[in-house]
Amino acid sequence: MDSLHPDRSRLPLRRLLVVLGAIALVWAATVQFTGGFFIEFGPLVLSSRRTTPALLIALVCLGAAAALTVARGRETFRADWTWYSVRVLAIARAAALLARRLAKWIPLAILLVVVAQSAGRWATPRPLWLDEESTLINVRDRGFAHLAGPLWLGQSAPLAWMAAERAMMMAAGDGDRSRRVVPLLLGLGICVVAYLIGRRWMNTLGAAVFVWCCGFGQWFVHNRFEAKPYSADAFASLWLVGLAAWTVDAGTARDRHRRVIVWWIVAAATLWLANGAAMTAPGCVIILLAVIWKRDGRRAASRAAAWGGVWLVSFGLCYWLSLRFTLGSSYLYDYWASVNAFPKAGSSILERFQWLGGRFETLAENPGGTTLWRVLWISALAGVRTSRRRILALLAAAPPITAFVIGFMHVVPLHDRIALWMLPSVYLGVALLADRAGSWVASATRRRAWLPAVAALLVIGPVIDLCNDVFALRDHDGPEIGDTALNHGLDDRRAVEYLLASRQPGDAVLTTHLGWPAVWWYGRVSLADGTPAAGGHFADGGDQLEAGFDDSGDSCRQDVSVADRLRGRRRVLVYVGFPDQSESFGAELEAQLRKIGTIRSVRSFGAGIVMIVDPDVPATLPPPAAGQRCIGASVAARW
Picture 1 (spheres, rainbow, N blue to C red):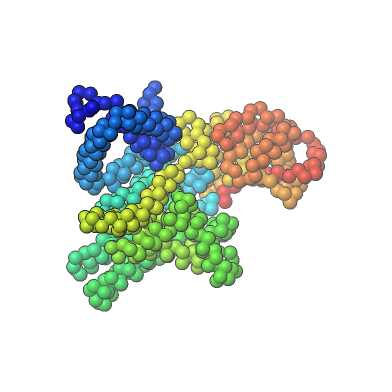
Picture 2 (tube, rainbow, N blue to C red):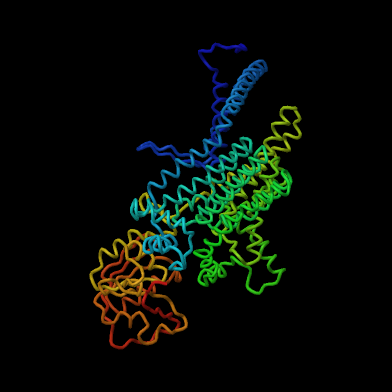
């Protein structure tokens, strides 16, 4: 029989089997929670994605250990039980001590992981795609003095953001990596502000949840690497909320007045960087002035409000130079209406409320980045309602409420990435719930009140499940070519480089309406006023043509069909890239081109196709077959 304190030089087989079984169980739980992992170090690959093998190992080890223990009798079982208890208790105490010492570093560790992952991903950038190309063409071809006013190609961006992009372009060129420096820094800035808010006003659990959601949220990650101003919107919104909380957190009326001046100046400046700043400021102002009035009196609130003149002047200039063109754009309005970003025109109040109710699930998916939409909104609401930090909770509630109000009023779209500016505040509400529940657990544990502790853990459970879902759905770009991730499977970079390398002076280029920004950007074709490309031609005289279905049949009339447009041309280069037509467009266009000429080359680049065509259009063309859709062509000019 083994003694209670056996020879330390050897470990009985049954105890070794229990230890191995416990390790296997922990491994299975880790794989289940994280979704598995794949780590590659040169030729060495470490991969685990299934829990079944670990569970089988645990079952075999624990079963064998139980059989050996039963065979040796009751005294052995008692001795082993004491041995296990002593060591499990020692491990638990050591883990608790280590957790207490390391807990405060968990949010910072999460932040550093996000920064490291972001740096690695930035080093191998995916190709730009339509929205990025269209916005950056404005930045490249307009110059600092002409960034104001309506933008080309149906785009919208704050002036300071575009100026920052242009400055980066002048300093580092127009490569895909340099184009994403500004959104990357602003996207990481969201995580840094989340960390600072968590460290100042929340416990470890609340801060960790906040940094986690902002660091791994799907659309935060996506827009961190997209040359669009949406990461600026989210950063500016959270920055103003945090700065407002810092303002009212001052200990004296004099300090609060100094801080509110700083807040007004920062709010006025961020208007030029992010449209989200304009929508966040009103709610923050109401709360700021109400708190100052309550604490310091009406005169102090009036003095604080007077500094709002700085913000109003800044807003007026920003609106006149930039924002009014966005809000008044019929192109953008029609697009937003097509994706249900507004209530339908002429809808009743009841219909608008029904539309508003449908936004919760939609916004939880995009930009919320989770399928657990009820958990997201209920947790955020519960966090605002139960938080110990009442002012911070009210400030967290202000942006989402503002977003729903202005969406209901048909002022600003309440739709996917356009609504990203309010998402940090929604995550802040979730983090406040985690903060409150964490304090309940700590308090109940100190008082040895286990029932409240269990109740608090039941609150934490859905929040942890939400964090796990957010992590599981973190951004996936889709198909890859080599080490390069692609957006929607498009590789405009390589496709256009091949197309223009194959192009000879005078050759025409044919693509779809929304395929042209890729050619203009990666082909470095200027669209500045007075340039040939702005009017639909290359500098060497080659035509820019756009093709598309026309089910009305108008495109089959003389001089507007693809065949008529290509008659008499020596060579045409065709790019089917951005999917602004139906899925069958590429195949149908290729079939029609084969009827009117010779296709010399077909190359695929991700989901895109480049064809080199020698047209030989017959004098008379047969009418299209019954049911055949017409493909028309027209001059592609800047819009």
